[in-house]
Amino acid sequence: MFQFFANIFGYILNIINNFVDNYGLAIILFTVVIKLLMLPLSIKQQRTMKKSSKIQEEIKILQFKYKNDPEKLNREMMDLYKKENMSPFSGCLSAIVQLILLISIFYMVRCPLTYMKKIDTTQIDTYIQQMKNDEIGVSQGYYEIDIIRELDYLKERFPEDENLDKINLNMQFLGLDLGKIPQENLKDWTVYIIPILYIISTFISMKLTTNMQKRNNKKENDIIDITEGKEEKEKNEMEDAMAQSNKIMAWMMPIMSVSISLVAPLGLALYWLVNNILMIVERLVLDRIIKD
Image: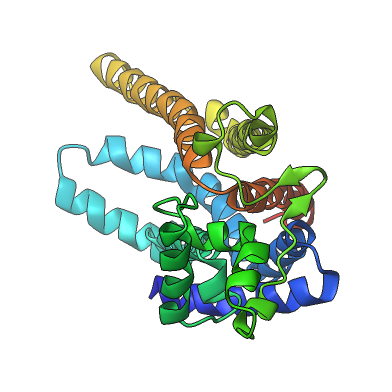
């Protein structure tokens, strides 16, 4: 499945790259195109988030009212979701789509000759074997990027190979080589620029999301307290546990981002960075437009 979408994305990215003749600029424009295609889902997700925050106080009341009757609680909550025309699994679709995008685009960036240039795997293996025979370094996970790097050498070895003429990927972007993998170039400080910017944008995006959720849920503080004594203590403990969980997630996401950014080509980190920036702008705009 991921290869299927990687082929489609590679076709789109290749068209853009042929037009602008720069891999970095092509990735930026490609990210904008994908974001526009995903806009209807983003609008739906934003509406769902706002509507979900509105019914949270009703859900909280139900949870305390029927805390000793799980079956009744489930029925009441399902009736509430039905009344509000919402699904308790409404957030799953967005998460699944994001996962498909993440893995498919990773495939595409990792193997640009396969998914962008549609060069046969057998031919790619021939290039790799020739490079190994001549003792030219080939990385284990990103050999297609190595082929792009050694393109002049391969053209000398295979002067009549028309496939090599298709490999017109200019991976230099603002002085950065988007084909480099930070893990393999630890002494090159330039490989950390995009990952660091990506991590910063991730923190900003998470902070924005947290602030929006707090603002949307601020009415919950005005809810009449329907619990006393032990129930109030249980309520506070539950909220503290949720806050602690959210805090852990807030730190885990950047750590995961750093790990992936270090072992992936900078082209992927550039896509994530631009996607984060567009996501921040999108959320701010949609938050103003969508009132309910």
